[in-house]
Amino acid sequence: GTLLIGVNDEGVALGLEADYSVLRKRDREGDKDQFELHLRNLVTRNFGAVFAASQIEVTFPQVTGKEICRIDIKKGHSPLYMEVIDKNAQKQKKFYVRSGNSSPEIGLAEISDYIRTRFP
Image 1 (cartoon, helix red, strand yellow):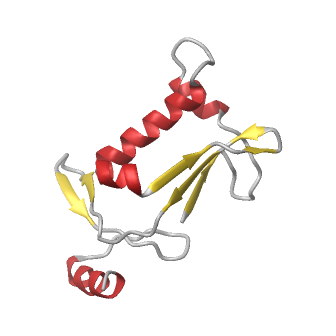
Image 2: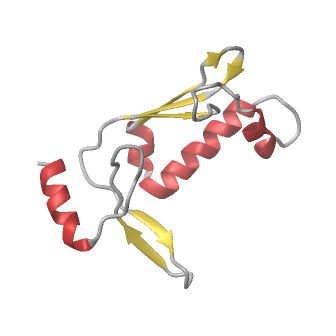
């Protein structure tokens, strides 16, 4: 799939300036590099180095004069679990699936059926 950052729900390019300002340290040099580094660090931390290095492509196209971030994610060959922190500050692994425009968590009873049909 494709994820666009810096674009609103109507498809209008807003740009990345607000995102860059959060990461900016000294000057405008390297904003895109800092942003991509931060993004790849998040992906690596949550999905692993192999996934981050081989399954995503990050580009920064210009749309109506605004720089946006486009992330193309390749179809996975094996399931990935998310490690989340629950209300009690305990880490738990959870499994989410993409369904239309949402990503619901699926329970233990459904995980094996989903994996069997999605990753034959």
